Length: 304
Length: 222
Image 1 (cartoon, chains in turn cyan, orange):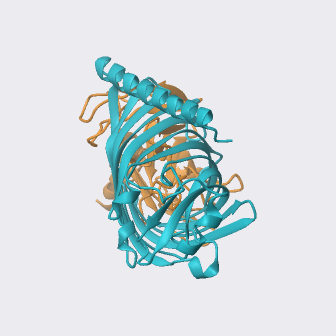
Image 2 (tube, chains in turn red, orange):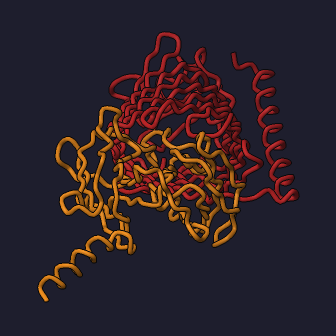
């Protein structure tokens, strides 16, 4: 599915999307498109992850406690009655208590063009979006450029119930890693396709329940003991020595089909702020291998 | 002397109604569980059908503060012109698709007098929205009588200065159920026992779109 030609086509398409978005932005500036609102979203998260390295065997699964902060700042521009352009700068930081080599900072930009098919809160909308940014880790071998492009369809059925459907093409371009002898390629060069659905239902005026499920097909990384490197030659072409997890391991890339299920509850503290609890379960499958990861997190979110 | 005094008092009693003496009507609105109902509109319509046209142009306003319409319910008389100041630091685009008044105010910046005023020339319920912020919602209740008032948090409303006579007293609320008894008539304004008209109505437990961010996306239109 991910032949080099195929990936190149997708990356090319992503670049086109970026160019189109940038031209639209410039056009809007030139045409004095009216800005409508500010974008200011911030989040403080704390969580626990029981398989940070996507280890397959039980003894290889490494858990950790994480904290993260994110802020998205930008503006909405209204292009007529039915189109909205958003441009925002995105900054995220994530810290790991035990494996601080995974501590990372992401800085990037997001551009999205949304078409609303009518007026009113029940009118469906379609959004094309693209983002690019740099992901920098304490352990520099993981540093990567991140690109994302996709489509989201949203529909509100009532004051209580709304739905999002989205497709994302994800491209990660690793920068620094050096492959183990006999392996070539960087495990952090990754491509993937992700389809998601999110359903949200308002239980009370304050309490919103959400369920999300996504299917990802593409590259993921996992870790392996050094003694097993040779056995992985038939399975992967990208493997590096990795000391991030405080022990000698190899990190390798492989193609997997992963299902990610999320259930969340959100309590509105005000019109701008919410307190959230999420549980996420990821199940990945490749050949006869199965890995899984459980994540529990709480967060406080703010939206201007 | 006593006969003279009786004569004067009787004459005054007969003349008072025609001398423009007016009365206040007090109403209290509760729901089926006894809770006080805010934002209910009480109207008094003369059964004679004679409604005096206002001497000057009527105006009212609905502000936008922190991306919320203020007030949530605004009762006005037919012919009233509504202005929509924007007290936020961002822009709004107010619209209505209601039969009683369809309009759209193009995106407009913060401040007073930046949006074209809208005159409401038909009675009925007008639901307002904002094309930028989907959760924003408000109701304009356009009535044909000049005698109306809206209940506050204490569930009480006072219609002031009603000339004496027979009236139909009605209640309306944006979330009122059809099963509610909404009309009381005839009510004799000027008659002591009729100067307080209370209502018990059934109100739907309506939710508005939640504005705060959700846990995994969803929620408000981006």
